[in-house]
Image (cartoon, rainbow, N blue to C red; front, side, top):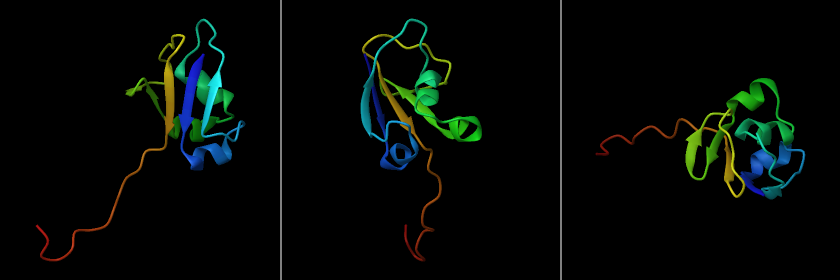
Length: 86
C-alpha cells in the first residue's frame, strides 16, 4: 500500500476528496501516478511537489510498497519585515 497525504486545499480538488488515503501499490508506480490518480492534470499537476518518505522527489520517482507520498503546494511570500525589526 501507498500512504498518501495532502493539504485540505488539494483534497478539495482531488478525486478522493480525502486528506489521507491508502492506494494499492502496483509495480512500476511513480509519485506522478499518485498525482494523476487524484485527478490533477496539466499545469495544476506540474505545480504539485511530491515528497516521498519525507524527501522531495520528481514525479517520475519510482515508488515501493509501503512508501508515504505527500502532495504539496509550494508556498512563497510572506509579510515584509516591520520597520526597525532585526
